[in-house]
Image 1 (cartoon, one colour):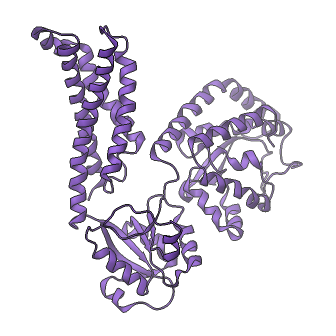
Image 2 (cartoon, one colour; image 1 turned 90 degrees about the vertical axis):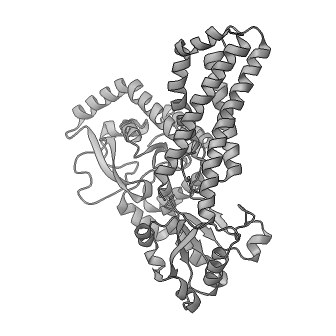
Image 3 (cartoon, one colour; image 1 turned 90 degrees about the horizontal axis):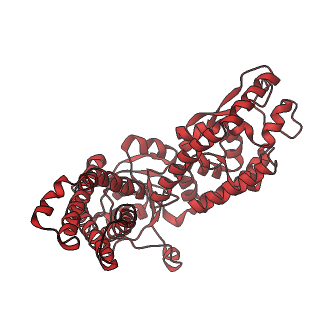
Length: 472
């Protein structure tokens, strides 16, 4: 089961269907709209627009589908959702093609414009979805007949865990869960469960087991509905976006509507989506990061140069300061800033800055007030270690102290850290761990409301703060 090969199947079909739809549409235009003779139709192959469309349109379509998230999670595609995604992508793409390439054509009537739009849409949508439907149906058949599946870890060791295994294993339509083993959470181990899969350890081993066995799904089936235990484990898993978490529901969940049915034949499970936004929003967010960061570095280059000269002339030491911070999925990276403190400012150990911090240089105070010291972080955004908007990254030294009091801080590592954040806008810089914990609630709210619209609001408020000189 190779996801890259599966993705390649979709990409090749999408490219082929885009070429075929364009070719058929071009012939239709010559015959029906332009009422061409046989010789004119044959001259299609000498038309540069025909060949430019054959070459460039498949690339453009595949880029659009990539932004939409079509080529991710390719073994779990639902045919109805695939229909919806293909419809909207086709509609958006054809509108762009129509206004970019066809609107100024010499066509006799508006009726022909509308007809051309409809024909191109139907050709592209029909051909694209037909191939995708065949690939998706074939994959679903392989899953349902147990020829391919998803490595799954069962959290729980009692009777409920064994019952969950039995339900999933005896489904009328197999859901694809291949159990590699279970982990013991509390209580005794059910002998029936032990007879069908091995015990791989305890809850402390869950991250190591996910890496070792390439786990794709984790299913919770803990006896006595121990929500505290479930929450503590989910808090660890929530830092990952490569694992699907499912929980066996109790009667309360069903009554209050927590259980959403994804398939008529599958067992009811509460699915916790590891992604905070739709895939297309992640793509737009990254594209905006690249474009806006590049423009910022270009437009602010005079400010960049002048600031660098003043830093060098007003205090001894390097112009730039690189400090290790903890970023996405807990990975360390170097965050770049203009140096705003005297050298050896932390010779006594890590310390947060304050309003009257004697370690800050006179020009450093000006830079911090207008956040000029953070201009080099646009380079971090271009590299992909940071985003324009996201929780501010911290050092491991302070993270350890925060986690002791607020373990939910680790949830922030589900996203890339940012130059600005909801916490920065609403609360500002923190001078101690108490304030960092207080600011945390705003960053958690950001995770709950993460969207392109939210990012735009935060960026606008940040610009306002900088113009008013309300930085620290």
